[in-house]
Length: 95
Image (cartoon, rainbow, N blue to C red; front, side, top):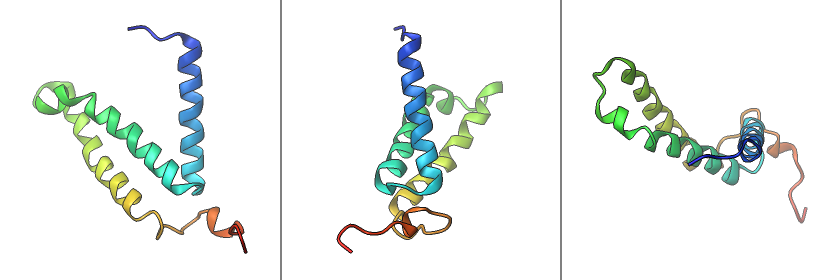
């Protein structure tokens, strides 16, 4: 299946926007979840390399597993993540 260059540019721009919003801590549920979903898809798409780890280039694919665990932990603890976030300085709606 082939994807047109225009679609890949749009998807890349959306991913970049999600990552930048993640970095500053905006809309944590959506950005942390989006990053977790993107990484989960990339890990699941490499399952063949993960199931055959002893071939020469496949050992680096295992580095994605602890990263996936870290992203799951970040998603579950997103409300407690206050370090270097912009969202804590924004006024709350209704205040």
